[in-house]
Length: 360
Image 1 (spheres, rainbow, N blue to C red):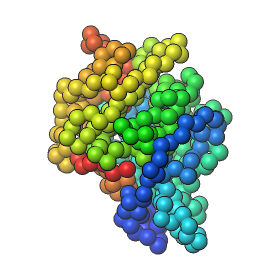
Image 2: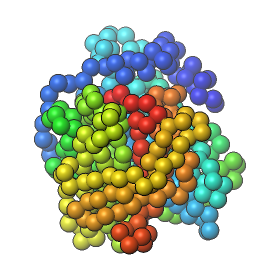
Image 3: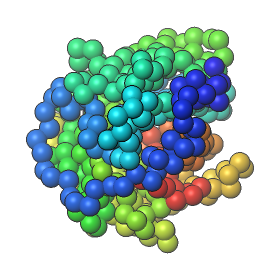
Image 4: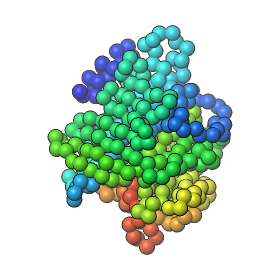
């Protein structure tokens, strides 16, 4: 089914553009998120009282000599203006989803997207545990593993992700600052070093694969400062079992507005980074021939745990999600190198706000 036809069936009363504008215009809370104790499995599930939420899995997989990168994201957006409407057709919650597959041999990125209002058996996000559905796209937590099924345009992801390490709480026990004001924060945990197995399909050909993945789950009321344009983020699984996450929120003039991250060593110790301890320096750029966005796809990142550089395995990994979340961004499979240039890990780099400033 094409994106346009899917939207027409899923959203019979409101146009896709109307729903997107409602989501973008929804007012955000003007108070700080309170500290809270993460409780599982409850916090694996959705938090519909918060404005924005996402479950985000990135990773790499191999089938013989063939290598792939993959990304899948389910978003939930609360529409404040419709919460008191009595009509069962009111779009109180929207569910978005993105899927992408990087084919390194074919030197091509495949991607697809979906959007629908929650309800009527079309889209849902359980509050009890991870169980997000958007028509025939699903992400569910069964026992301790995550099962993803996303049949997309030209490709498909059918993967199981099994934790090999405990949940990694980001920031201060899961409360992660995202800006200079207290209200700019999210509840945030990661599950790095996920053992991955399953099947990838590409243009009718199937590949049995194994690999490693990273999961992020965040929910928030006010993610970005009003003067922020976007962010740079990495989630890297190191070959020794370590896990590195780092991000910077960029001001519209290009300088760092905020930064944060953490490093978990193989023995489980976690070092949380403060904003002044991180520095991102572009070392190589790629300009999109489609949008003319100029992305710093090669980055040096100085952290208290060491200096690293990020190198994409394919320069053209730009995703156009204007059919769902409205953003164009770069997100791609990348190697992580240490200060001596040795490849020490692999994961994903995400670059947002370069085509146009994000609104969240």
